[in-house]
Length: 436
Image (tube, rainbow, N blue to C red; front, side, top):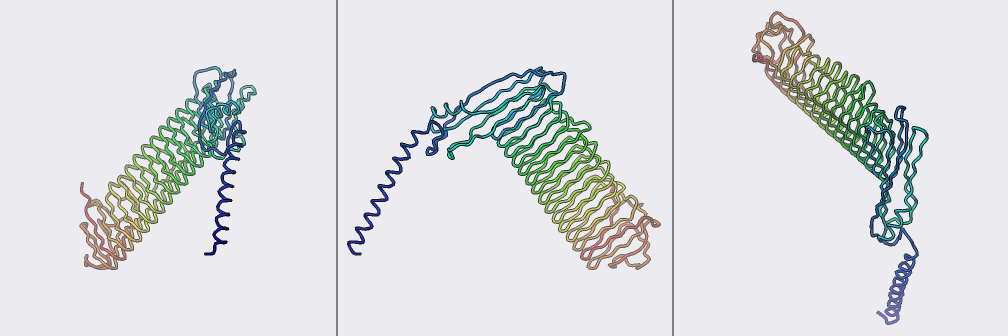
């Protein structure tokens, strides 16, 4: 390499080094001119300042509390008090303790009162410091129990307990905890968990929505109850709905136990459904894209169960059941007075129990079918398999063929009765006497 080229490169490198030194010195000098919010220092040193205020209200009249907070936790507690007590905890961050102490004093929020209507507001101020944490204000509010609550939060947890009025909560990013409430409940969080317990909505409705989070509901009474999570599990226990219940999860398991409702609809695109010790006055509908459906000790006027890819298992049921699986087995045990419409594209079908009024239809494209029914079951049977055999412990008076090992049997059991149609494209059909 020629000497002039080498010298040129050295000059360029030296120039860049000098420019870097000058830039660092400039920014360090400039940063000293920022009283707060040094944009060139990534250190996050916090400072906390607590402020309190008591607001007089007429506790004999309706009270409304509205909270709008872009950053910070919100805690609202209903109690046996005659005024509203507001505690605001301000937290500021900066590159040194002195800067943070100075900044926290300047954090602004508002408390407005118009009679019995109170509004708390905190908005994130514009700041040059893109490195530091966001300044926050936590609101801790104690109110008379008979208050209507409306919270619009941005980032932070929301906790409400002990109130007896309607509660509405919208939260962008944060968990929501609700306990010991009475009144209508409407909750929505884009990303966070929702836990609700000991809710007495009476004749009012309950709706809980989460974009990305688990929702749990326990010890609850209400009219219509709707729970939805785009991506999270649903856990429901000890819930009494005088109206209809709807549970929907995009990608999560659904558990529903020890509860009752007028009707129940459960849907999940990708998750298992587990229902146990439940009483439904009307129809129970369950749809799962990719997941198993398990029901235990469930009563309903009718069952409508469908999974694209999963098994269906029912232990203890009565009434009309329609169950369909794209790829999975169907098993029903301890059934009473059941009317059957069972179909699977690929899987076995097993039924054990007593049959109600027909017609009854059982079909599998690829799988064996096993049926256990009482010895005195009076049925008109139509049994058909393309590749397999037919066996029955209950005598069949055959009208189509007299050989019980043939692939198609049509006739009567115990003199005939309800239609009983069983078919499989590939597999045997076995009818056994139900053990007492």
